[in-house]
Amino acid sequence: MFKHILLPTDGSELSVAAVQQGVFFAKSIGSKVTGLCVMPIYHTLFYHEKISQKALDEVAQQFKEQAEKYLAEIEKRAKEAGVVCDVIYERNDSPYEAIIRVAEQKGCDLIMMASHGRRGVEALLIGSETQKVLTHSKIPVLVYR
Image (cartoon, rainbow, N blue to C red):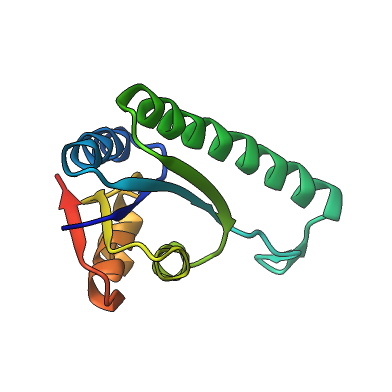
């Protein structure tokens, strides 16, 4: 069956539930997990205005701290369940690309993720990250709803 499951999270309520079920599933089949949180990269040009590097660094630090909280929760759940776990923090403006790349690099044979995150209307307009992973991944994807 599956030996290594990637559990991407964006910290949304459904994503947290998907992680919890992913850890439970991994335990039931004797699999290990890798938790992943992908945060965006902000560039110096935004709406034709220049943003200072200091402001960008502050935002990047806030993203990293938030991601560390999400990933610590995955580690905690995995440890409590007795599931081998590692975690990865990535910055990428295309989360679905990072999810697929990390899954391939880590040798994951399943990606388990929430059906949608916290992107709301934007996801309706440009498509959810989950839909993009489903469309582009050669690795099986289990969608939690």
